[in-house]
Image 1 (cartoon, rainbow, N blue to C red):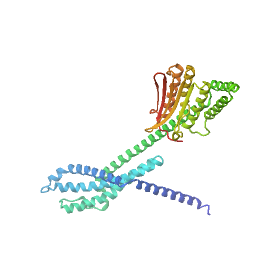
Image 2 (image 1 turned 180 degrees about the vertical axis):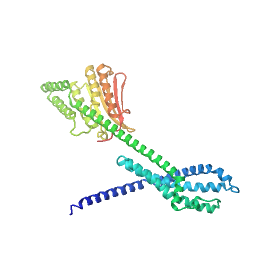
Image 3 (image 1 turned 135 degrees about the horizontal axis):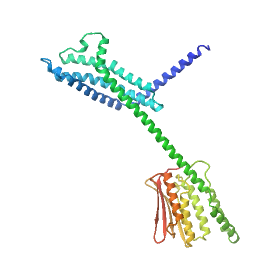
Length: 406
């Protein structure tokens, strides 16, 4: 290949690419306009034309009435309206297409000043040099058909350039003003919407990042085992092996299940209700064995809800509060953990029969921390509520919008 011709080939390819992109942009803009858009544009054009025609008629009404023997006021109004309605309808339709082009450009990048200038010039030129001559021609022949006396400016002599200049004197300034005002206002709106959209996306990304960070912190908190709980359980295993090795083995198996469930997942998933149920069951089994079966517990999670997404370190702290209160009271206690879904809302309930109301400073701190976690993870519609039941018992509920399945 001739090296001297290489730059020309590159320029030709670049120009062809630009032409192809321009054609694609025009096609997308055209396809984005339905018949409703064209009908709305035409209706706006008819309205603007009627307004301009009415003002023009009222401006020259004294001259029309001053002519002797000339009283076809209605015919004159219709004749004037016809020209302005045709002109402004054509301009409005061209303006709708130009706005569709600018909207397509704004979706793919910033609108440059030359794009705005070209749109204004193109629509104004189309209205002045294409639509207006058609409107004036229709106006002229309508004038003859309605037999309106007087001389139309098309018949006042002069070449076509003179007639175009006369037409532009009457309509060019109005067309340019309307087109420029509408396009500049639309561009400002497009840019404002683009900025607002980018800000909303950034805020949404920041919210998701905060939730991911909080979820990761909760996963680490869940994996960070309470050393007192771990050593007490191991000591209980060691003690039980001497007198009741089967119970010791059961306790050790429960501890292994608890440790496995407490470890964070390998992926970045938030976790599921099924995983939390496994963790809570192992924890409650350990506490039940340690209390010599004074603590009875059951965890009911329907199989269809086990795959529901649910953050870690929310259910277990409530269960631990109830279990700790049961261990301190020395009475028979029953803890029930249930999950239900109704009306698009997921409810996790922790109920303790035989527990004292959670009112100590440490318990209040734990509950306040849980409220903050639930609100930060699931928003303002999430609820964490507590209730005291007679004669002795407490209930905690976490209610959130259905988070969907993993």
